[in-house]
Image (cartoon, rainbow, N blue to C red; front, side, top):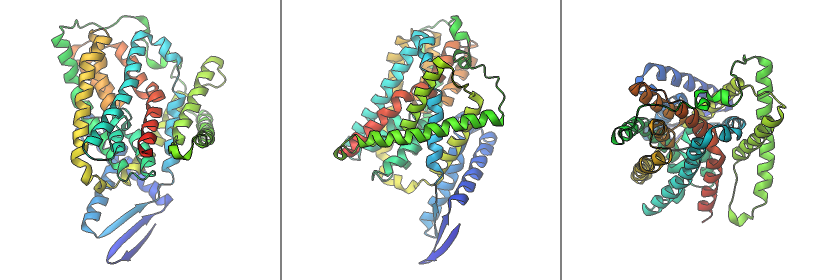
Length: 418
């Protein structure tokens, strides 16, 4: 850590060690505030967002007062981001689609289409409002279906392409989506049930009585030990390294005039997906789910906190009104799709209504929002929808990224090439 004065302004610069220490302190602070304040718990606001946003606001105040500037060295952010998306890929078992039945296929394909629609609508509205269309993608599937993790990842890589303010737009949009997804899921579900006089009864099919971990063939009883953790960490790091090499060669295949760049974390995720599905058939390696969950939680927590604490909120000033217009339109769009298209496609029954509540949650925010929405609805009507609690988390947390992330990468590359 170092500091200096220039023209009566204090310049604080945190090296990699100090930045990591501050990030962890902010992350712990975020967890504490999430437990203490009901608002954060109700709307499933992630702890890294809470802690990181506090530092971003402090930086904003200092920036306005002109008394100090803060610079962080986020060298660890990129490896943590790679690790998180790699763990997502290891969870991407395609066998789940076949085992989850017709409803899972319908729901998953609909989510994939939503990612394309959100980006198309966002980019189109951005052009109407007179801002760069990539900002519309940041306020599309990047932040809404992708959540804060994808917002921080794609926001940073987009800024590297010269789109100043992309990360701030993406993270602000993700926060908006989290709140709206938590607010609207329950009311939309209740309206569907009452308007259509839905019978309050859940599917009794055996497959939907099982938890997601049982469907994947992972009992979830494995104890977390150092040996198992090291094996999973080695697996994740190996896929990160292989993904980086493959990504470099894939990008070299495209002419420079195309301005196409496939982010390394996307390729790392796909390398992990390929391994996971080969491993499902051959059982070469025992997947330790709890160890992977720890790696995923830690890597996401550190990477997202660093992204939040280094965010320049003042970059949003000129984009505030256009961004709000895009987000309101995206919210209306997803509500329309849930009510008039997804609900009929899923059968217009109680399970379908509960799944629509989940769809509003992760289509605007994140999977925890979806689970919270569905839990509130099921508690209200006194009937648990096993079908919804199996399908929605599997699609929203893992399977959606198989199409969602490449779709985002294509939109960004296409729009920045113009």
